[in-house]
Length: 367
Image 1: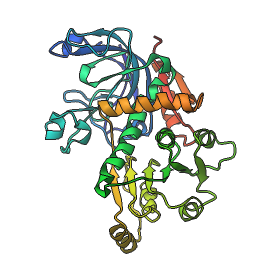
Image 2: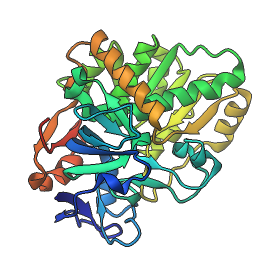
Image 3: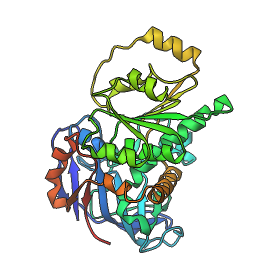
């Protein structure tokens, strides 16, 4: 069967190849699920892997099948699988367990091992192929009524986890009731985070580079009831004066410099959540004494959040369902650039390199 892969560590090696169709029996104890892939989303992670910034092949292979955002339909299940059945629409988690205590209790998303295993990213083949098989533990049922936005399940899980982690960490304050939130970046993560924060009834500013006029990202932001602010027109200090200092910041720009600039405006007792995975070696000059003083005296918190487990996928899907009801015909607008079939894979990289493009995904099959 067809698959799209790269040779990790070698830039610009994306190619199509034939691989064997997986067998249900490859998953022991009757827990296998065979899924026909319908759509696979791609994002900056796939671009950075293609540019050899990170990523590794599974042991024994010199290639890595890409794709970590999958939506499909179940074709066959093992005799010990009871939460999905043939005909169900599903997504699939990305991280796979290592050997740390967190991995053994189902929290591979926060493994304490330096080596991690992620489908389509590191040491495990991804989903950009016609079929995949995985353990039922990682297969998440998706409501058929929302199948048009099913390819957003994985990015929604990332947002759900990032927000959850901020609230969980701030339990140290006993009572934490954020009123104002900023989302840095208006890509798929930024816009889905905007929606989820609005569903929590926060006053949200979504901050990005592009001017608002004629901008689809600004249109979606405002449809969610949030404020879109362009850094072309306003500094972060200007935004803080107009809308108030943020109690919570979700940083999703892919630019490490922005992450550190955010530290200057966070409110007292605030939380800054970093979700960007930035390859490269950029260096940024910061006002370290000022930041250290304000963060110590202000009880501020910064944390990183990556990947989601089964529960975060469920929370993300629940948010997509509620968001679809609260903001009709809005989430679908994120799906801007479909590619029809893996044969057209050469369209991927130019689109991913275009900062004006919102969401690229490949239509692989129909249900």
